[in-house]
Length: 418
Image 1 (cartoon, helix red, strand yellow):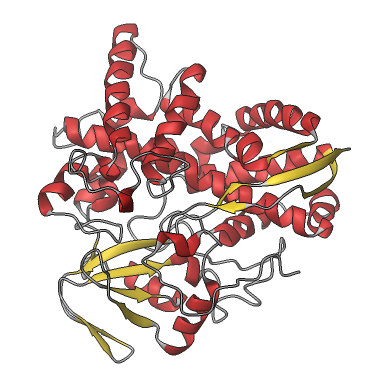
Image 2: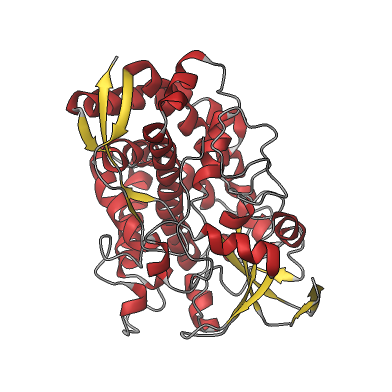
């Protein structure tokens, strides 16, 4: 039941976004796990970095934020300290500062609170899937995978539905800022410093911030305290408040990360269904719903890596990571590690245990939205399985041009209604 076999030659350039337009280079990651699990890469556009590719190493190092800090940025690209301070979100902070921000919004994303959204998600799925299935042939990323996280984003933030397409367009421009299908300001093809203080070095950050300011002014005038944004603006136990800059960056992160990663997880699951009709049959006839969401998310691994910076020398597998070195945790590699998973290239809706790290589990930065992502994935596929007899490819899929966030940006399918 292998769904997708990698085609890279085992020596792919991990610094190139173009490498990933054929999907993640899993042959390269497999070679690195076997031969060089702490691999140094020279980087033409900045400081070189270490690639960590084995699950066990990533889990161990992710638990050690004192030695492997987030407080110099989380992407491969270099930035000055001034740029870091201007752009950072709570993702780019270490404990205890990270927890001071996280605790303000953690309750809104807790499992019990998210569970209350199940009926809302089902109603949204009903609307989305009824429209898509009636079309017969369509782009599943745009008509299904993009739609559900986008509409749920509105519920979480507390924004009008009519604003959501624009918000998601700007979120795409931020997190997919290396793909010309999503932005005119392509990160690795621009030399301007005009937006270097904006989140993701993107003009979309400025537009989103202006929107957030106007949205909060309207909500304040109306006495509306719904949505997670109100929580983040409340003072902490010590009376401290989030700064205007921190609020801007949090809003941009919420719009970008809260939408894209779930979208690409759903798209990967849909692609798996098109590959082998047995998967849809399993969803229709077997009890897979405790395990299927995590397998779909493992298979997708949409956040392919996160960077850390070493604060002191650290020895691993005969190599010395020096203080100040960049270190990349390749979660997408860990989630195909055959030392951690039985037949990792097999898509298995019954897989258990499934200790993937797609959410950054084990460290202080574990994804706030993981319970929401799991719920959205489960309900979407449950409702889809009720509505169709079959789903097949209707053209060649296309991957995002990015070595940071990975997934199908186009997925043409044909469905037959049940």
